Length: 116
Length: 117
Image (tube, rainbow over all chains, first blue to last red):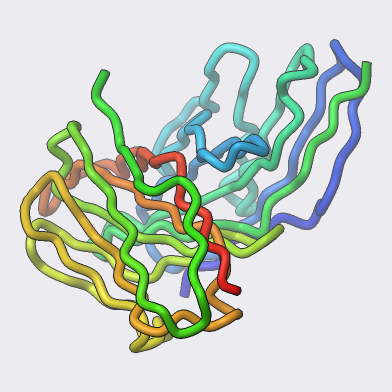
């Protein structure tokens, strides 16, 4: 069965510094996708970055990068040069591809607070 | 802009009074999902449609029903809301192809926040 674990309920980071949000996962499917979403207090889930299980390179999108360590089953999100607007909940999510179930599961999230 | 629209954004209902939440999309995505998210918790999948095929999660209470009359619209009906059903309800869509090689990004609406009095 799929499982996503985010062990950091809350994190603080100083403005302009980098921060790493942890995510580990478990699946028996050899092909899967990993996602990170940001959820501001308004409630909307905003897609940040995607990593496929067979991608050789770590994904990057602007200030976001995904530190993908397949053997350790981890997919940590790195936010560089933090901004006040980065304060939000961050969710790691996964979808098995081979199983064809089209189901995405989410971790419990990490609340990030950026300090001025 | 193509998007996912949820209505209403805020819904207050009384215990046991039926509620319908709506979701519409202009993305022409073939899969639509309903998630329930309680405060400070992960979104929990209630059900999803692949085209017209309905897929219910095993632990979704019978109190929750869904309809998808066409590609663009999907409804969540809560027949007899209880206090425990107070939550944010998130609609999401994705474009999927049978046997597709990739996992596609979920696009979410802004959510409908349900309060049960």
